[in-house]
Length: 126
Image 1 (spheres, rainbow, N blue to C red):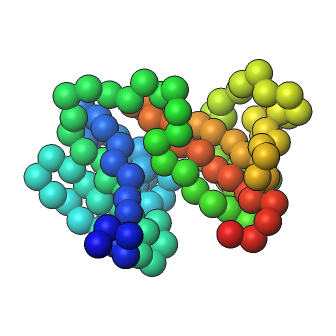
Image 2 (tube, rainbow, N blue to C red; image 1 turned 45 degrees about the horizontal axis):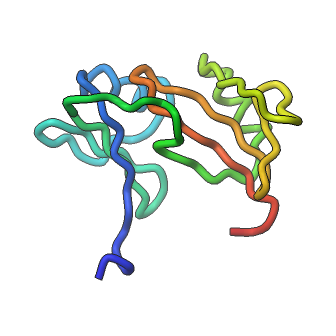
């Protein structure tokens, strides 16, 4: 059954090497496997995402990949130190790229192919 299987996100690109370099070199994700048409990245034990060649790209209108963190301020500082620019939205209470959400606080950035990546710090343990 699918309910007991690992899930993963797939990020579309026209240029697998360019987008893979962003995640590998700029963000520091280790490559788990290089496959025809795609690259798998590992984030933590048992958690992966893929960059794959697709015919169309993401609209960037919703989060394609999200990361749960315990210290959003620290993660945002690290992203900025790596040259990542956070998205800014008209969300009440959003300050310096960090927005309050019903479940905690979040920040977003886009990769070079417009995939929207979210980083969230939940207010209750997950």
